[in-house]
Image (tube, rainbow, N blue to C red; front, side, top):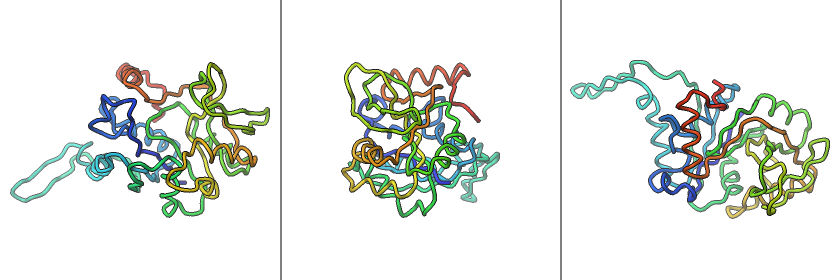
Length: 256
């Protein structure tokens, strides 16, 4: 099963970091948050990644192109013009890096990587959030209900769009950013059928709006409720909180 990661946004709310690097490459504990997300999926046995690049795409491509040398001890022999990896990392990942455009919206980025996804069920998430999510249970839930899409629902204040759920975890409606309301919100970590991509019409489509709203309208969106740890890295304060947890050895998302 492939894992699509949206990693192309500008990250303007974290401009202290993103002026010089793409948001998914902002480091927590000396590793990009993108790496932390990928490690979580790999711990669940999912190691085939499709990364939707955009803003400063070259930084992400360079990191994975040089992954072995950056994360291992090396011997550089200038005379022989060779590099020897002394203790190669054991990550058995396959990574497809696709430049999906600088200003393409989230739904448009998903459309642009369709040729690399095939016809099988796939996972999709954002490149800036971590959770102690049971990914195997999420995938099993999706396969059990037979709909086109599953969204991980997490409880949060209403600065995010609200998912209206019934008792059977059907998403009945998706409402954008109501004021001063508590509820279940989109926590990312989707499982999707390829047919769900058709709900995104072009590069300007925002996945969190018409596609999710219309999937819910058609009865094709179910919610996997997650009440554990979940944290998007939206601000410098968020970044520092994640850094403190990692440094103290108490990072809830470290499932590997």
